[in-house]
Length: 426
Image 1: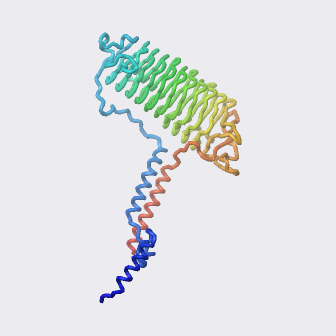
Image 2 (image 1 turned 30 degrees about the horizontal axis):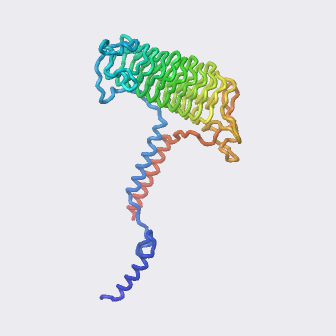
Image 3 (image 1 turned 90 degrees about the vertical axis):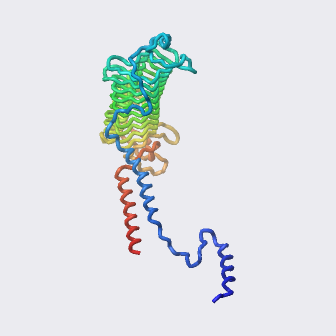
């Protein structure tokens, strides 16, 4: 039966409803009724957990196998004989048609281009370029051998760029001798004796964005100064090796991880800056300093999960090691060793200095100033201490391992099973 008061009541309810906040716009009888959460939301949570956890867990795991680099996709090489360029005149490919030059005139705006060659170094050094100051770019070549001879030998040569090449099976991939103002970037080095070797007063060489796998030593500097090694990925026996009075070089933002022996060796070399690098999962030490190396600045590095100590000073003095993050380097019981003299393991300052973050000493901190109340004691004859160990890492390192990943997956799976059973029972 039609009720004429219904329209009036409905109008009054509409007016009341219009004044209800947006979040509560439901009929009164529906308030308080709990809507079941859709099951797919839990599956989304599981997927998110896996995506977040898996990369972090893998980050802690060193690579189990080193594979040789494939020939870069989309690059076609043409077989070419070995060649030498001695002096600027021999860049002229009309007079010297076998010099590998394909274009350019040697100026900064139009450098000589050497590219696209497949060269076998099994019988002799593949390419020699000596006593030149013309601008040239050597790129997109595949230089390989039987481990007996060099890939590229560069002597007293300036203004060059060597980029996007693949070096495999050479005794040394590139030797740069008494040269300056050159760039070596975006190359791949695998299974060579040494990847790159700067020797005898090389200066202002930029070595950047290269990949090294399975070489005896990735980047090597002997008696060279003022060079920049940055953004390289090194997975060799030794990642970076500075020796023979190499000084005032900058080693920055490199990934020296899973090297068979050590991440970096500083031997008889002083005044170098080693900062913002990752030294992890190396067979012995992350950082090794010896033969009287002094006044090196080691800071803002991640040093974790190395087979022995994170850093080992055999001999050396006045090196400053501060604001690094050390974790999981327990092969020697303590994460660092100092057998040198007068090395500093923290900075000074007011109201206090800053040391390093050691994962095995992060408390107590009674006054909450970010400095652990106890000093960190190192092994070694120096009796060294970090007087201002940090409670929190200045450089974050991954601490989410495989077990944590498994726990997350199990928890989410339990939630899914419980939700499914509850729905079935209802």
